[in-house]
Image (tube, rainbow, N blue to C red; front, side, top):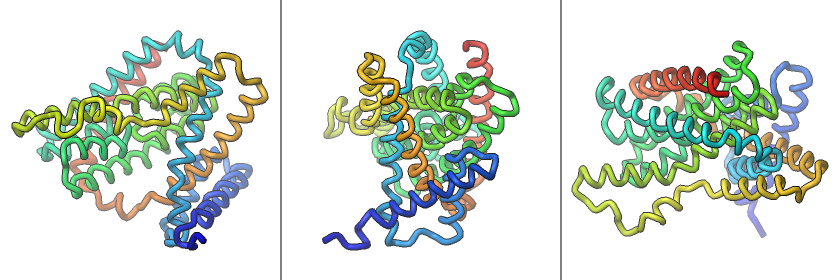
Length: 333
């Protein structure tokens, strides 16, 4: 018999309740239901707290996010992706490289932040948020305090960009595809990118997820590159006890494989229009659960404790890369 403490049922019930609440509020408040789910979760988490009995269930929000992303693959029109493919790959490579190098340069030269912290901020900003921070921290054996410092900074910007990007997109009247590509290129973590994209429109959400997953796929390469750089500067072997393939696969986001499989199945004509619509609806509900959980895990007290130098580094880099990135996306697409 599963104990209440170890059961996911209470926490899952809380996520469902917040998701339904967001749906109801969306009929009254002029905000997207996914953004409302995050705001409701944030309010509950910071005003009431998250009791131990619901933590296991709330922790499943990452699973619902990944599953929802996999299901959105059914709505991706492969012909449009293939047509934009080379340009997208160049944009992703350029944005990722520019962000990592700019954050590293600002950290070391302008703000005098220690090397490990700067590298974790660069990985988190350039690749895929906290997941990249953790992956690179493992590859360079960073201490836990440094990891927490960098992760908190990234989470702060996840919270800010989640609101700022849709606001900017609306103010500039950006086309849905343009907004989705821009958000996927320059925002940090997968959850906020997905929320911001679908808050604008389904099309914007699909493009945001697609571009973000391309960025996420680079996490293994970035982790290996950092391992090599730090090993060479310390005089150690870059291989360690694991081969290069293992170093690439371990941090790789496995749900990307599922997303690509669903894209292939849908575009081979193996799903009917009604089935694709059902999968899209299921993904929307899964995102509700995921974003409610994301809101519950945002701690405003932790964000307030972040030092100003990491925040300034990431802010300057984000403003530069997002501004240039938006100009390039509007020109190319």
